[in-house]
Structure formats: C-alpha cells, structure tokens
Length: 252
Image (cartoon, rainbow, N blue to C red):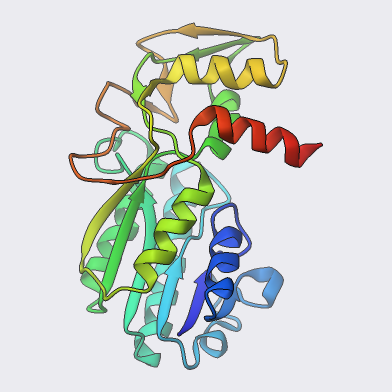
C-alpha cells in the first residue's frame, strides 16, 4: 500500500514508519523536515498523490489551550481536504484515552475537536485512542513541579510504550476502516504517583513525589477512571521495567 504518515518523524510516527517500511509498504512522511507543512499546505497535496491510507500521528508543539486547538483544527482540516481530493480509502488518526473526560484541559478539548472533524469529514476513518506514553513521563514531571516537589494525583493510569502504539497503528493500517473509535492501553494499571517515583528513581532524580488528590494533570482533575481504557482495549506488552531498561540501554 501507499501510506502517508503525518508526523512520521515524531515519537510514535518514526516507529510506525519503520514498521510499515519493513512490512513492504511505500511510506511517505508529511513533516516539515520532509518539505511538508500541514498548517500552510505546502507540499501536502504533492505528498498525498497515490495514497491509499493516511495515518495522522501529529502532535501540537504547544499544550496551551488556544495554540493546541488552532494546530489540531488547522492541520486536520488540511490533511482531510488533501486526502479527500486524492480519494484516500482510510484515514487513521491517533488520539488519547480520556480525551472526552478531561475537558477542563484545553489540550484534551483540542484532541476531541480533532476527532469530531474526522468523524464528520465523510472519509472512511478509524480513530485509535491511546493511553499516555511512557515517553511522556518527563513532560508529566515538568508540568507537575511545585518547587522541587512533584505533586501528582494518586489516580490509576495505564501508560504504554510508544513502540506498542506504533505496532497497533500498523496493524489497523492494514485493515478496512472501522468508522469507529478503538483504544490501546499499557499492560499494567499503576498509580500515577508511584509510576513517576519509579521513573525518577531509575533516572537517579532525587526530587520527591507527593500524592495530592487535588493536583491537576495538565489543567484537569484526575480520578481512577480518567486515564484508564474501557472494557475492550488492545493491550501493549511492554511493561514499565522493560521500557526503562531499554531506554537506559539506548541512552548508553
């Protein structure tokens, strides 16, 4: 198949491109480094020529409310328009488990707006909602800092390795459009504060983690269901301890 990956140089996108090429697909990347700007449409129509499937794994460069909404709405409209003009048979997008439950956060509102645009566009589509990535843990720490203390809600989470998300996307890419939303989650439900403690300890970061039920997660309150997948998700197989070992080995 001819597949365009929008965001194919990112955390998930680069892994997805590698999987798809190893499977024998022709893959083109829609990213600025490849001469494609999804916001201005520069190069977008050209990269879309002959595409059977589009996979959108783009992420906003900003978590702030207005910039995130502008990014997702503009990029999604542009990619949908270019895909429709080319007669793309399957539009697959990566979203976030809990996007509909975290509407106090502008970033999650922006992701839900993106989902609505895809559903209403008239193209055959699939939306894969993923739980949070292990690779996102440092951003969680940075957002939760209170001086030298990391304040986090002791809520259950199901973090997942980006490579497992990429594998799920690659599998869905080879299937007919579901015209529905699916979920993928990590193998182990853990408390967010405990997970971050383990993450910092593995990095020899001595900052303390405080369990605070009122702590906000990117502007939103968490509970034990907010970031947990529904009753029938796909599951990644990479446990946190394995991921942290692999990360350390790669860094070395």
